[in-house]
Length: 216
Image (cartoon, rainbow, N blue to C red; front, side):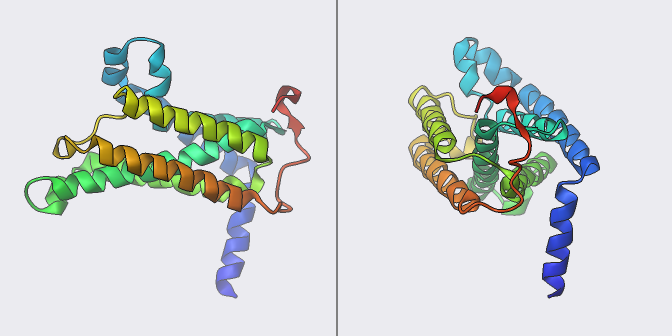
């Protein structure tokens, strides 16, 4: 009973304007830092394929856009679906890669984890969590989820077919095929999860908000 009371109170805070503003700023700043983090890989790629390179910051930037629309009492079902699926997918993916990389590294497991690793794991777990928590407000349907599924699987194909995936820890060199299988599986899990989370419809969905440009 006490747990339910805290959950109900937390749900209320999620939709408060001040909380949306704070979360918007956190995600926007995190996205900018994320694109900077990818700078060397973006320079090395150096063409239109850069669109497929910065996975996590693209996800958090999409969520920043969703939050900004909410602050303006607008909504975009497509960007809700894109943000939710990719936040969860890349949030979990990054944590998994860091942990596996540390486990395969020489020396004790905990010593292989740097402060940067802990920071990245914390921020990426936050990405996955906010995607799940805000799914109760999303208004996307099957059409939007199918479009996001096509994009997500295309991104996986480009990442591992053209070797554009995020650079892996040195201890994971030679494991690209295994990582590709894990990534595609995680894409399917993420899509299934958000299909379950958003159906059936909940009363919290922001149907009262105006569609952004009347375009999904």
